[in-house]
Amino acid sequence: MNGMEQDHYYMQMAIEEAEKAAAKGEVPIGAVVVHQGEVIARAHNLRETTRNAVTHAELLAIQEACQKLGNWRLEETILYVTLEPCPMCAGAILQARVPRVVYGARDAKAGAVDSLYRLLNDERFNHQCEVTENVMAEECGGLLTRFFRTLRENKKKQKQAAMAENTQDNQE
Image 1 (cartoon, one colour):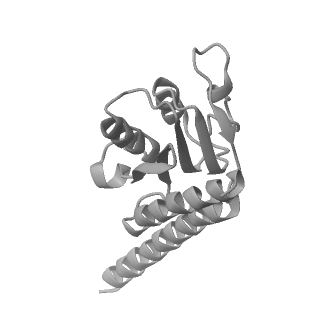
Image 2 (tube, rainbow, N blue to C red; image 1 turned 180 degrees about the vertical axis):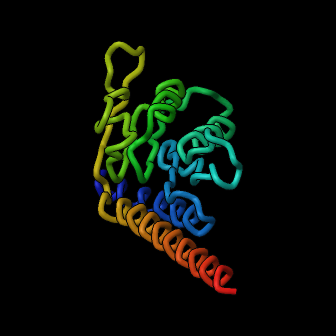
């Protein structure tokens, strides 16, 4: 498998994780950590489930990978994630010494790799990452677009139902 095929293969796994998140009502973001060609961690967002702001897919995958390797340094790993990491996750990536990050869609509102900040390539830090962006970006972005569209539609329906109920109560 060449490099691009490999990136697509593992990104597809990250997409599967993102789909698990969406099925739970979580923002559909998935992550996979690969060490020397072997998947050692898979995770998806769990913020709503855990009611914990730090349970992002990347952080959960990094934690699992550290446990699997028995080391906080994730040397010789690649992190695949469906959405450009936020500042918190970029910080964890740097702290874990992940040498390469591959992500799908850019995040114009919170991206800390290319969109808003360039934390993973900032030479002021003692570690930098090789970054590959836009791998299966349409698929990754599409998951998010569909999720938020459905969320907005459901909220609109709930609001309309509440208004109808209020109207009915006022008529009685």
